Length: 129
Picture 1 (cartoon, rainbow, N blue to C red):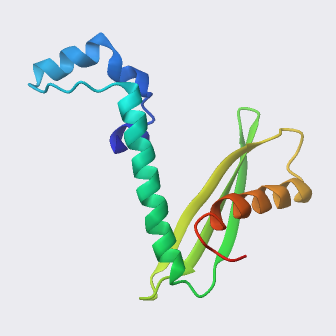
Picture 2 (cartoon, rainbow, N blue to C red):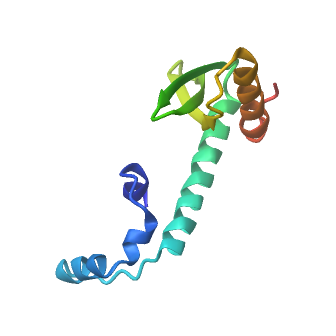
Picture 3 (cartoon, rainbow, N blue to C red):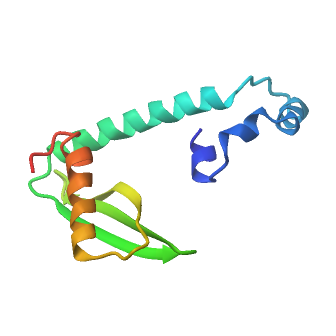
């Protein structure tokens, strides 16, 4: 599942006849469907969220940064939080990557993106903001 996510491989490809032929050639009998892979991806997400919650619990303070860019006429914004863990290691986690309206990324739009992300992500993992 991790390989499929990192390589941006659509889960539908794992149901193709060519994939099944490949698996038979390498001697693997994996009956994997896109639904099974999707379920595993959600399990990985839940585990990563729990890991981030545990790491964040030990943080004294959190810094939030953003970056934005336009690609093929679409504007994207990422929101990242940074903190030092209990061993003074710098940690950074991507909270969200959002497509925003292409009408222009104003300070007001960016403030809304950050507020929504904090409300949906940081509060969800137990950070008091």
